Image (cartoon, rainbow, N blue to C red; front, side, top):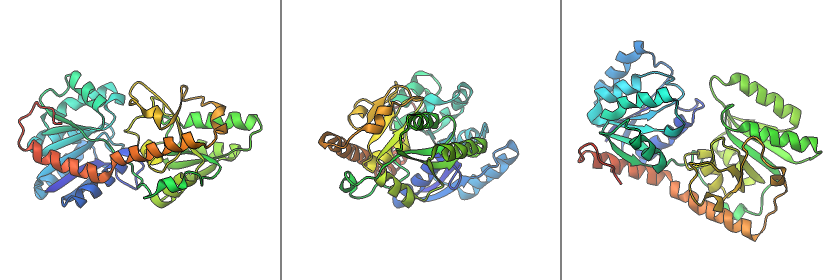
Amino acid sequence: MKIILFAGSYPPDACGVGDYSQCLNKALSNEGHEVHIVSGSEWGFRKVTKWLSMVWRKHPDIVHIQYPSAAYGWSLIPHLVSVIFSRRAYVTIHGFIRLHLLRKLSLMLFSTARCIIFTTEAEKVKYRTSALGLNTNMVVVPIGSNINYPESADRFLRERGNEFLYFGLLNHTKGLAGFLNLVREARVSGSDKQFCIMGRIMKGQEAYGEFVKRECEALGIRLVLDATEEVVSTELLTARAVLLPYRDGANYTRGTLLAALGHGCPIFTTIGKESPRGLDDVVGVFDDWENPPQSILDFEYDDELELRLKRGIQLAKNFSWGAIGFKHSEIYNMCNGYEKGFDIH
């Protein structure tokens, strides 16, 4: 099939949805599809004709929109594309539960799409019960890690270094403040533990990025910015542990969590109301994202932890991009034979 994938943001732009779109592009291409990416910063209504004429010229079988993404801002062009090309439109909605109310209301314009895709069952249920899209096929396809897993992560379980690692997009909403608070408290107590922050500074977050740089210098934190996939993988394999203090709790829409699981990392994170059952079987948990306990820094490797890490590695394999690409192909084919208004399982 010929697929136009509206991504909005796309690497090297710092955006989780953009990273997802890049991985999905590769997965769909591996399925034999011809994929064309639509990205950039021009999403004002003056550019409506540009994007619509591009779709008409290419005459795709599928128009697949990833929403929201950093580049779109508050633009309604993705919604308009979905309405005009409704018989070919598929929309993946990312992080529905966390969206601003006005953005949620804008999703009503996607109700004419052939299919709405969610990344968790909880988000699909929330969307369905909100009456925003009663006449639309709905399906769940989980995200995958943006970082490929090593083939034998379990070989490195007892060969880790000494650094406690935070990684992800550097944004004041992402929970980094909790990690910095942990380090500050450790330094006040005289701890010589080693710490590292690895990530990218999002567009519009440059001032926060400068703040993080100053904090790292003051607290003796190693800072790794804009690392390649190979460097990220190496850091994950050698970190003593990964700290992911998510404000609203860990779940399987977090690519950073999946990457850490797939690399066999000891993980300490927060649990929220949307966290899946059983997650605490593979990670260590704490309650307050702003104040992770100092006891995390004194954990020890033992046989029980090794079993937990191995379970985490196996769990992460359920989120492979090969399976995700196949599932999308299946959805495209299935929806062509469905009338609207059904859940697809």
